Image (cartoon, rainbow, N blue to C red; front, side, top):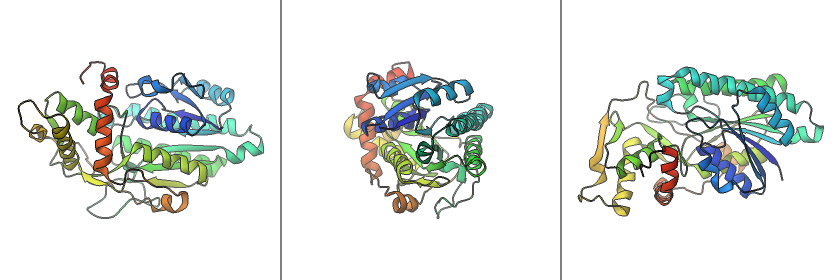
Amino acid sequence: MKTFLISGGAGFIGANFTELIINQGHRAVVLDALTYAGHLENLEALSKNSQYKFVKADIRDQKAVAKVLAEEKIDFVVNFAAESHVDRSIENPNIFVETNVMGVANMLSCSLAYYEKMAPAQKSQFRFVQVSTDEVFGSLGDSGYFTEKTPYAPNSPYSASKAAGDFLVRAWFHTYKLPTMTTNCSNNYGPRQFPEKLIPHMLNCALQEKALPVYGNGKNVRDWIYVGDHCRGILRAIEKGNPGETYCFGGNSERDNLMVVKSICAILDKKIPRRNGSRYEDLIQFVEDRKGHDWRYAIDDSKAVRELGFERQYKNFEVGLEATLNWYLENKKWMSDVLGKGKL
């Protein structure tokens, strides 16, 4: 049994990864500041599990991070902690720099100090994993794919701050020989996603009979990966990847935003028909486009498939989407608790 320090583990992807780690027979120490996107509700099912421990702390807190590393005898550090919403980064970029840059620098410095005190056998197994995004690569045209060799070209305060953190991870490997890895993923979807994100936001609006706001003409394209598939990819990187490497994980499921919203509507039409007999699609409203809205993201993850044996459970986005919507509809208390307003 190995012990994982999972920073940002009360967030969407981090909580799903924590659940995976414990189900694999390992121990998970979650460190989270419980800001707006981190919620203990995401970890409620694990609260009585002896292999799980929660520590409330900010990744910028040097004393707290150093203490957890030493006292819990951490084998792997996996950093999910980040400010991650593009719209919020446009409104308030400074907090993104503080968390996504300074926070990562602190995690790296504390991990290096801890690593240098390890016995040689422990050092050979230790890994620091930075969980990043495809947004650091910028925007694609109508063709082509991001790979591990794509140059960084971030276009939003969010992606720029994530890129800066990724570069620090690279520097700590090359300068200090800390065994780091970076993973880049496409858009995640699945259970426990914070309700400001596209899929749960559209579901919440639809069930309240509110307008479904779609940016611009809705033709911006994203590649969608089910969160469980992404988490298994990260674990494969820890188990089989090499320090200093980068691994990309995609869903092989490109959909434009309008297509995603219409798919949500079609599923809801079958499951919860509107009382007035009209379709949920009638609620769609096009709104002013996001500033600097990237046109298209898509990932070629053949390196992860080839070198790590990565594979996806959900090879069809619509099947995964229906499973995701089913989870939210079956867990209305979760959404009510997270929103704090009982909207579902």
